Length: 400
Image 1: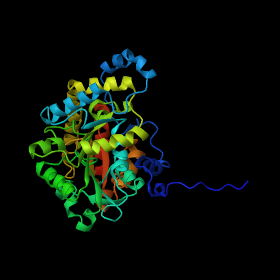
Image 2: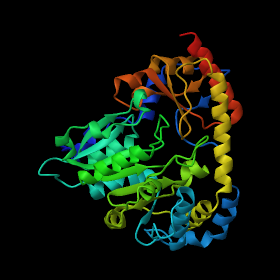
Image 3: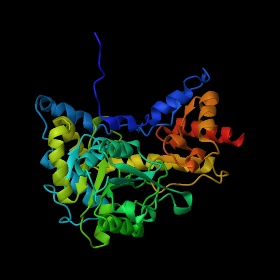
Image 4: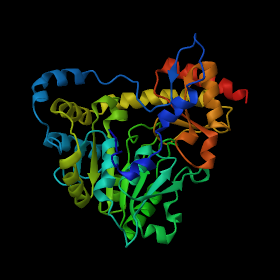
């Protein structure tokens, strides 16, 4: 029987291998030392313990597994999410409405991808639409862009600009075709947060060219000293509304629960309304017991404060260990060290070969030539393993 290959979405061929696949391929023929403990610092998966109180909530709501969950989220979960936003970003109680401005997600990864499917038009000003993406970048942004049929334009983030991408430097003819602008603050991997002036300029740019500003703020509750300024807070300070803006928030990093897949999108009610329409068709939702857990987590700031202090301790360790390294810096937020090492892939291989430590080469997160000199170190392990790994990394770097 002759088998004919079924036609598939041509845009799938535009997707690159995910960074972790590339990392596995890079290291697969390099045997690590048998007597060393494996320490994984390549993936941003929190290793701190989730709050204990969530166990009882899941057990108490056991019957909820037998029901279909509401696609848009339980009302009390939406209210809890809005209340957290009000506390975290000093918003007035009338700034956001839990019925119009928010939608729950099965993790922000799903939301950040599907938002492009919901909002990207087939044409913008009679041409193929463009989506602006910061570089280095979270791979989901690029995947969403390509599957939605847009052209990705990568906007470099450089040290001389505190790793904030200069979207305004893009040519006017490209900006006229721009449908969405992705930005992450604090950024992954650099940990840079936009200040009020930068937010003002970016919001104005999005509105001037009628583009949706898609803000990934999953690291906003992890910082060492100063709270990163969020886009909603910036709108309040600028005395402006939420038009053209959607912000994404997640419990994964804040509460150490990446496995429950819980987050939300909040912002312009017109954009949220259209996003909801898409999600009724294609998106899975958090089961009811998980929504109960998420409600409790957004209502509690104590566990998040403790979590943040643990990361702060690890960054203080890093500051001491790398005190003689001119390329080390303390980020505005997040839990990554974006470290210039000369040749990121070479150092990654040496760390695995000599110490059984896994980090991420900068080249796997970016096409920028400058990113090839970096590695990303995720400070997600416990204090003991983190200290040991950072010392080993410092020792290896001293030999190159």
